[in-house]
Image (cartoon, rainbow, N blue to C red):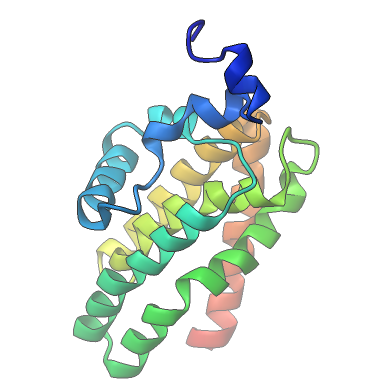
Length: 187
């Protein structure tokens, strides 16, 4: 990127991290095609997606992505679980992602970036998983893919911590969520 990061660009406050990955972000002006493109990138080229993810403390695009993900998730939950879970799936993605990022972030505290970037990393795998969560067979498979493959990969690439460390963090958070699920839903 020798021609992209020039002194006039630096003067306006941009850094290599803000211009490095602009193309991979969810585009607000084209939500439907961007949603499909983001899901395809996460399914087919997740390494490239996380390498291009901007490392900036701006949550607008991930927040809008999660809000948009609430629509197919609500439809999925409505079809498979009923009205009230469908309504909950419509409004809960953003608040739930804030809480989940708080669980993941202590494991990557010595990473290069702060909590907001961890939230940005979490938003896309979580949004990928939400529509599949209500489907009986796809729900657990989607949880394993999003929680034990996409999240460690994203944390390792974006926060620049080791792959083993990010995997251990995701296994610990996944175990904690599994125990909570067991005691709140099954028991």
